[in-house]
Image (cartoon, rainbow, N blue to C red):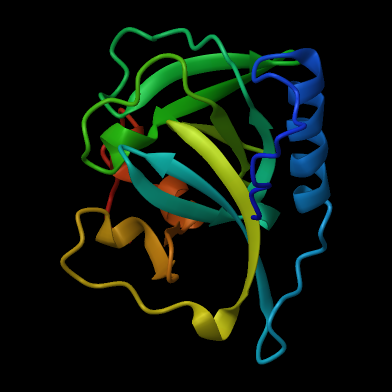
Length: 182
């Protein structure tokens, strides 16, 4: 991302003209096409922040991102579950990403990333949604074994921990029912 230096003829900060210039600069940067590396299969990742740490999930597993969602807490729900939301008439369970990853509580006002698990959506409340990036699969490094969320990690990039949505769906912390070993 490029930052435009302050110009002497720039409008006063906080004015409508200054806001318009900032939005035009951001639109110009975001309109740049992403060019994936050519030495492997491309992975398109949505990066997000949980407790000050960068995470990502492949976009192909994401149904939508809700900037704001009123989560209704359920009695007797597992601690990692934030509750449920209504998405256009469909009830979607929402997990608190910070609790799932062992980092406390996300809070009640972060965005919700809705994952599509083969017809059974799962919401993941995070602190902030950052960007969409494209990398090659060869740049995804195998995860370290001793990480707190090791069983949920698909791999590591230079800037984020990539989570495995299939592992999230299978995580026993997100259900009230004990799971039998398979």
